[in-house]
Length: 236
Image (cartoon, rainbow, N blue to C red; front, side, top):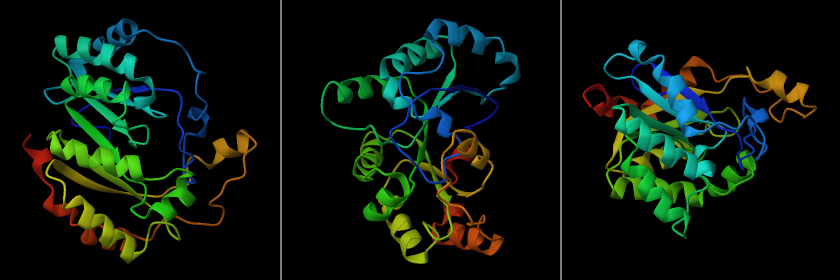
C-alpha cells in the first residue's frame, strides 16, 4: 500500500493538516521527533534491500514529508545513487510556486520516481471543514505534476457524511481525468484504527459515531472514479 513492491517506510514528523480521520495525530507537531541524517536513514534502509525485490524501495511518509525538503533531497539523491526506487507519500498541502520552495521541489522531483498523492476532498469548502486547510495548493501541485509528467498514484479516503457523496466523487473524477500522469487511483475506506491515539492525546475524536463506508459505497466510489481505467502501475 506504500508504493510498488516491498518498501522501507520513513515517517517524518510534522503536518499542517488536521484531518478529521487522521490515524496519526501524534505526527502533527512540527519540530519534534527523533533527528536523523539522510546517511543514517539510508544506511538502515539498505540493510533490508535484499527483501525489496525488483520493484521495492524507500517511501517517505508522515506527517507531511514536503515540510522537510532539504532532508528529502539529501536522502533521495543518495538513494538514487545507490540504485534505490524512491517514493513520497504526500497530501501536497505545502506546495507553492514561490521561492525557495519551488526550486527545491523541482530538484527533489529529479530524484523522485513516484508520488502517492492524497486528495482529501475536491470541494474547497468541504476540504477546509475536513482538514482545516484549503485544497488550492493541493490541486495546483497535482496539475503541476501532470505538466512535468511525474508518475502519481491518486489516493482518496472515502468518509461517510464527508466525502462519500456522488456529486463530489464525480467532480473528483473530472479533475483526475485532466491529469496525464496518473498510474493508479485508489479508494481508501475510512477506518477508526487511529481513534485511540486521539483519546490518548486528550483530543476529541471529530468523527465519533461515523462508521466505515459500506462495501456497496466503496464499490460505487471505485466506479465513479473509474479506478479500473488506471493501470500503468502494472507495467511501469
